[in-house]
Length: 106
Image (cartoon, rainbow, N blue to C red; front, side, top):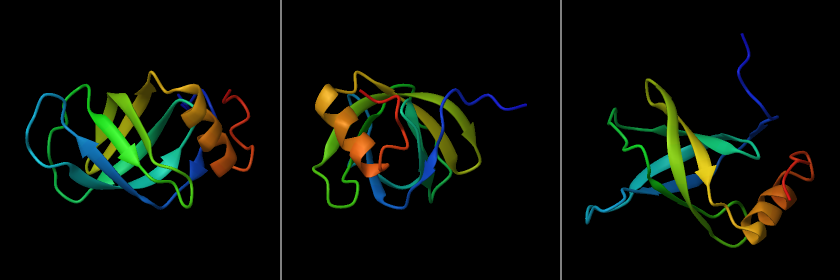
């Protein structure tokens, strides 16, 4: 049964995941797909992410996007993260990245 609430586009760019309240270096992940509500990332290592990481990524030639996220699901090395407090500018950047495909972004 499909649980997705919005369309996704396939992506391939690096993602940095900062652990909230930690002085550890950012984790490196690979973006897998993107929707107006969140992103799926793949990590090389099988680790436990906290419920509220901070994502930082540079989608192609667009400026860097930094946002808080919420861990929604995990399956093996794949993690589904929902954007929290994504600003209007970053929403427009993601819409531009998708070529308008993610039309729900404002």
